[in-house]
Image 1 (cartoon, rainbow, N blue to C red):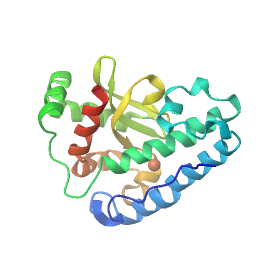
Image 2 (tube, rainbow, N blue to C red):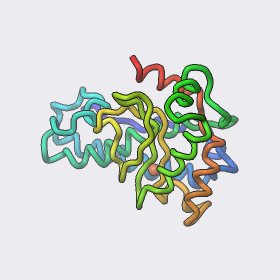
Image 3 (spheres, rainbow, N blue to C red):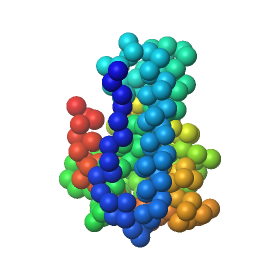
Length: 204
Ligand SMILES: [Fe+2]
C-alpha cells in the first residue's frame, strides 16, 4: 500500500533564524507535520482503492470521499498538504518583494504590495484560534483569505500560492501570545521566487 511520506525540510532547522527559531522548526516539522502524515496514512489504509489519488485531488473534492474518512482527510490531509506548501514558500536569505508578473498582479489586485501585506497580516492576526492566512488564485484572480484549522483553499476551489500557519504550534515557543509580531517577522522568510512559480502554475 502506497503511503504519503514526509519530505525532509528543504533547509536546516535553524535556517530561518532569527525570525523562526530552530526548536520551533524541528518540533513543527518532525512532530506536528509527521503526525498529520501518519494519521492521514492510517485513515487511507482502510481504503486501498484511494491509494493512487493525489492529495490535491482529495482536498479539492472532499464530498467524493467515503464518509468514514472524509473528516480525517480534511484535517490530516489538509495538515499534510498545507505544511508541504508552508516549508516551500519560506527559505533562508528570502523576504523582499516579489518580481515581475506576480508583483504586477499583486499591485493590480490590492493597489500596492504594502496594502497586500496589510490585508494578509490582518487575515493572519484576525483568524480566531487555529488556522492559516492564504494568498490564493481563485476564479476572480488573486485573493487573500483565512481559514480555520487545516482547511485547504483547494476545498473552496482556490489554489493556494502562499500560506502562513498561525496555529500556536507555529510560533508559541518564541513569540508566546504575540502572534502579530510573528506575522510581522515572517515576511523576512517568504520565498517569493517559489510563490511566483506557484502563481504561474495556478493560472494555467
Ligand atoms: Fe503547523
